[in-house]
Image (cartoon, rainbow, N blue to C red; front, top):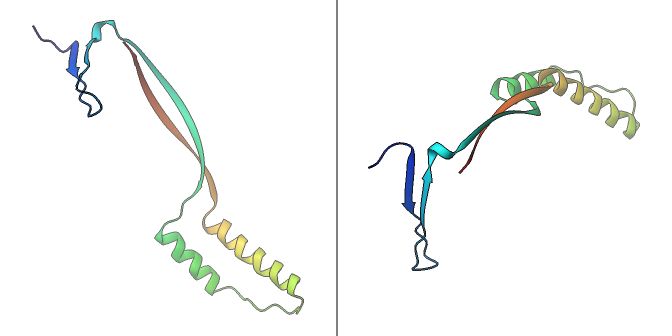
Length: 104
């Protein structure tokens, strides 16, 4: 007699010619449902944001009056980083993970 509370089968593997048989009676399974959250820090990088970032950089005045290499690099880096963080800010996203753990 078969019903939905029973599961059985044969594990097929090429390692051996002795095939193990298993049987699980689902009435005896303890179901634990846990909810975990994972926080991901990410930037939303998509075509629209990349286009806006490109336009922002194109419209930026890159004229730097100082000829010192370090000053020029710091000015470039600050302008670039500010535009990048403005268009694609860092956001924390909470992701819910569901785990169903069956213990036969």
